[in-house]
Image (cartoon, rainbow, N blue to C red; front, side):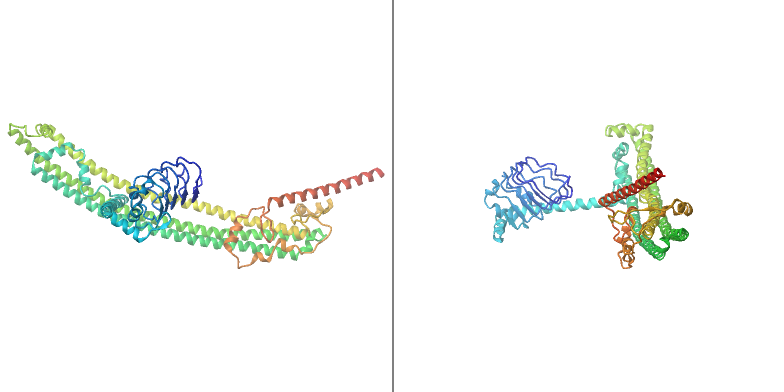
Length: 602
């Protein structure tokens, strides 16, 4: 599915149903003209459409375009739309500037174009022709009463929508502050939601209603105090989060800059060491090409010593990079601990306040039960003194006519009220704890993972730098040791002569890798192909250079252009190596053949 597609034309395809378009969420222009579509549907996900063409179909109604509020150009001419009220549906498109409804049955009605211009004040073009002010005024005059009524109705709906939106924002705000359900009478209504006995007690008389009103007032006042404390706590939490986010972002940028500078220093060190090695090898080229094995051996020892010293310098760079990373880690850990501690103190302070307020709620409820117990006992005595109990409601009669039933009803009422209060307190506390865990729980783990990745990256970058340095040093050594080295792409057949076995035994294992040389000594014109002074300019884009260096594979050619070896070049090199091996085999066969003839002659 082409989710990034912006323009789609499916005209002239005999399409009967609009389907499988929901995933094209970035679509801006959709053309389904000259098809057989009978109904507009399945466009609910395409909110970015600005141009919609449905010309010459079989559509009877304009519908199911509630999400396409950004439509600017709408072509739905030559269809089967008969209802003139489709104009009312088009009023929802506030950005519509051009529409084409030609050859629809509804357009044949009197003053249709003028009515359309009046109902759509921002419409500029109809059938791709500019709407004149005279046409719009005719439409306004012809539909004056309907427009006035419609505008009043729309104003009312808009006001209701704004109120709903405001209520939704308040609900979301209270939910984020964890104080939802604590508005006017909300907790009080929850306390009496399933309290059948508590509702029945209201039938006793006005003096009992006063007790209920007193409880309601007390509960609402305490709930308002909790809401104020919750709002203050929410603002403090948001402020703490913003401070942490800004501090964290600043620390990360600083750490990235320091790490980048250290990586650049590593690259500079690498270039400097390569240049120094090139100078050393160039200065000692005659010793490397000497026929005296002791001179060659001594020069190679100096070469190995330079490699060892370079390794120590790379280790020093590793320590510098690790020092920057560990300082970053310690700083981030300190910031995280301060953030966690700050949020914990803010949340705990609010929890302590909540516990105090909920204790007051329980005290108010206890006072209510005690007052109700006195009044209910008094009412029960009055009922006993009266012989007529028919006027008492059945539920209340069953309670007050039995002392045990009355006592159980009071206890049940008290338990329900206390349960509602406890549940609300537990809800607030658990929400705060969970929010704190969600906000801070992942920070330590994320920082540890980041630190581990950074350490591995540092180790890898230093190791790669040293490996590349070694490889380039070996290539340069081969260059000065062998004038026409194998890595240079010169399609020449070269005959290599191996040194005698006696020289190999005297040179030892250290010289075994460098025991090949050419018959002729060439000049140093090819040296820039191995090491170029342009590699060591200071006015370079260090970001690109560093990225190129870090992404450099170990099989990269060490030339001045620093380009990757392509597959074709690799194949050519393999062919050259095979040719050279064949040459060596031919030489070896000739030598063996000549030795055989010598033996026969003897």
